[in-house]
Image (cartoon, rainbow, N blue to C red; front, side, top):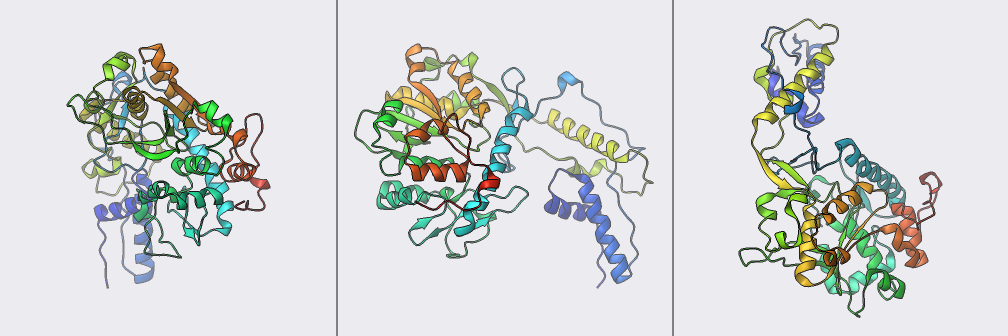
Length: 435
């Protein structure tokens, strides 16, 4: 059966295989498929390169001052999700921000690949696979065994497993229970799972040293996914959740997340106490996309349909042309003003409204998150409110944890007490048991 290939449909299929970023992948895909069709079925073919035509008028160039500094606040956004465009006055360079998160994800992926050898699990699709664990006979590979037993025995804690994984449909099905949907706490990159691993372990919440560090005086148990109900100007309340509420403390946990999220100015400015707690002019600002970013290969009308002889440096010419197309499209689309570090702003407002303290717990390998924290703290008006806000690292909690949990955190997350180095990945010959 003779199959006719069109350039547009071939590029669409190439984008599905290789992603939106590389137009050369589309060319390679088309040429390879036509080569196989010609050699196997004996059908003549003509290659269709995706190069800018030499005779086509170039798009107007943007001055350096007019070129926006791009900053994708989250990866793998849906077409309708806003993506932030950073203001150079308020944010650090892109390469410095995302290198810390990417390095930590890569290290956790290697460590969990070794840890998962004795646990049911799957790996996500893509170039940077993530280990996702499945429960098994009263145990869970993503949790320290005594902590998981305590979670199962506490209905309010176990309800945290009701939260479905946001990318669950793109993951392989579980081997033991194929009908089960993946949960957020199944992921090895989940900061909520790390938080519950620590504070749900027997004896941790009762530690006098830990309570003194966090300023906990009551005998209550930690609550996870607590509704803060931050008041709005309209008289209603916000419906978002705080990772943990314990007595008079609110906790936001971070691990491999890129940042503290960005939101539209109209949403942030709708909080009743924003101007009372913060100096609005000092808060970090961003510009948010109202449309998704379009790749160069989507502008089919800018590419020639005719065959052209390859020339020296054609790859560099094509890359420069693609960058020009994308910059021109960015300059033409409308933007919406917004705020960076939205989660910090919201949780400080929640602490102010409820009369509690607020603490961010992050990994010491993420100095970018700490810088974002101090940029928001500098906008808090009163010293009294600033003293109620604190920041800790997971490593600072390790000396107050039981030995079995410390070994699991060391091997699975690379988290060790301050002043010591975690076990090297090359030395993890055996997966730590669930002591």
